[in-house]
Amino acid sequence: MTAHANALQDIREVVGAAGVVDDPVAQSAYLIDERRLYEGQAGLIVRPGSVDEVARVLAICHDARLGVVPQGGNTGYCGGAPPTSATQVVVSLSRLNRVREIDAVGHTMTVDAGVVLANAQAAAEQAGLLFPLSMGSEGSCQIGGNLSTNAGGLAVLRYGTARELVLGLEVVLPDGQVINGLTGLRKDNTGIDLKAMFMGAEGTLGIITGAVVKLFPAARSTETAWLAVDSTQAACELLGLARQISGDSVSSFEYVSRASLDLVVAHVDGAKSPLANDAQHFVLMELTSAASDDSLRVRTEALMEAGFEQGLIIDGVLAESGPQRSALWRLRESIPEAEKLYGGAVKHDISVRISRIPEYMQTATTAFDDLGAPYHSVYGHIGDGNLHYNLLPPADTSERTVWQRTWAKRLSAKVHRLAAELDGSFSAEHGIGQLKREDLAEFKDPVALAAMRAIKKALDPHGIMNPGKVL
Image (cartoon, rainbow, N blue to C red; front, side, top):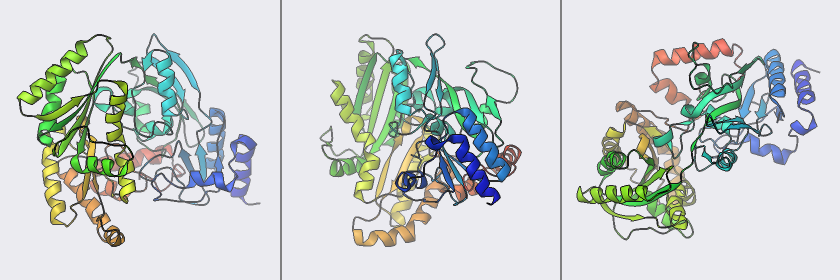
């Protein structure tokens, strides 16, 4: 038996029969990514049942020089979770799924990395509190993956990205040692903030197995509005106005282009436009408050009135019930599904400063029209400067394959370059994975990139952690 085979057998013994995925049908879910862009093979797929088992698995892989692919819910868009070689070991965190503690006094929650995001939200809600990280995949994505990719989502404007919601991490290093940083301290000025290195590293430095996250008072009042605005410039100005008039109660401020809305109405059953006009730009705005009185409604109506008076808002509707609120959010959250039903899209995830969004939109629209790519689906979290400037293949299905092969990569480079020219980012919330490694090499500051590689070399000298991803 070879050294690798011995190592794989040792790993099997560590995790036991319950921790090994041998069924070929079950294995397939671990080997291909969410968008079906990347599919690989693995020497072994395991689901450790404890932090100790994760540590022992990594120690074996470290000694045998076996590649390790950490995996959460496998919902990423950039190919960061599937293996790239048949010799690699996929380490799924799905069995590490306990909410370890909720501290209602300190407003914190300690969770295993394999806790599904929706379950973390529900646990906080049962305690009368709020865990604000929220996204379309929250029913299947896991906390460890959210932190490893520094997920953004729908409430970044008010609460920040995943990184900003973390007070402490438990991390297994490539050699099997464990960093126990689950103190939950809000102030700890004792040197380098180690937890920051692992959030956004996509499993290339170690495996996050636990986290202490911040909780907040639950929202007792919510106001949701769908607004037609004059332009992206008007949307950005309206955001500033809303924050001022509402007392900074804006929790979400989402942009939806007419093209994206039309896709949803055309392809998603039951979807209807809430406004009867030909506006080209829309905003889904939500305000929340921990107070259970009518003041939030009054402030929302006041800011809408001010928006109309200043010519920023063309038309709008304010949700009058829970079902109406859900219907408005469904329009925004169904855009990726609608793009898929249309025939796919070349997806992007750029960010620029909020004040430069109108400039980016104008420049990009002109550029892509000139390049013969007039089909756009643009939406995103305008409240934090993050746009999904997606490009659609021609409506004529006979032309799509040629378009994808000829234009897709060239157009993506243009989307990313335009963001870089405005001092923005080509990856706001989706990460790097396999898909954007070349972009990282092209657009990242070379000194910063060298520092990242030095950290990788120091923590993972044998390069076993998530090979072929990020760097």
